[in-house]
Length: 402
Image 1 (cartoon, rainbow, N blue to C red):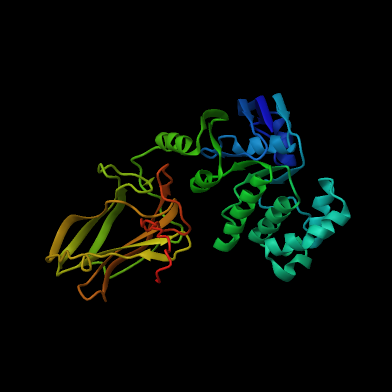
Image 2: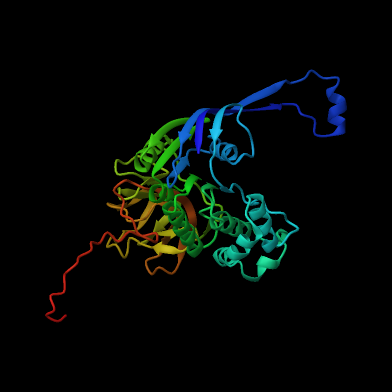
């Protein structure tokens, strides 16, 4: 794939009528004119066979427009795009399937559209169905599929039809952990077979693990390109720091309220508020409390969950050897983790205040924050959310037992 000074401009009328009434009234009003948006500006990039390039950046940076131009869905306003080879593209949750056809029929339709013969599709069909893992639904109309099922089948089709070029837009988070692992394995296999892969994602950990190069985009322009670790670091430096972590949509709260959590936030090792931080760095979780009356021996606790809500760790002041005296008024509790062992990804935080028996809840704030852990060039690589920090040792067997 080669992009040479590619730009894309979109135009739309700001007062476009949405009904016959608006169309009629618009004839008597002053027109608002047309607004111009450049989704891409002078973008240049070449991807060689067997190379994986990740594109990262904030929403609205032009990443998906880039993929749509590469796939031929839209044409650039200026510049040239060269694509040599069979293209497998997965650009959105609809996966390009016809809703009235079954999954099986859509597999054959998609294969025919990319130029594959029926005999070849029949030979590969079982591999596709097994990879997608949707069972008997393969013979049901796609209109009855969930978005996750459609995406699983779409990825299976795109990855199993021997593409020479694979375009992927935010699909690695679809499905369970086992399916995500199969996706990563298939991408590595395609890479070894010489497939050129262009990956757009917000999952910085996947970019670090999979990609040979990374590109950072902002406002339709390329602002950095190079080794994944370096580009990710540049991206993180441009993020706005000092803001609060994000409240989670499943946030819940209960308790009797004699003492309450007034605020919960994250700090880096320097004591600055942050929405997330690099893997392996110091994390401080701060809790500000307000007590309306004197509360004897409260216990402050935390819980860190993965994005599915599964508990990873639950420290508290009692287990941590910090017995607290009776509290009233306001104060601050901090929990410091000198070297965070969490792998890159998104995590959820809960905070609570219980009585000294850990039975009565004064304030339990479930999923009060979500935060991101970003990959670092020196971050240990392993499967799962937790890096244990251990080391491996090998001893040759000299044949003396053991």
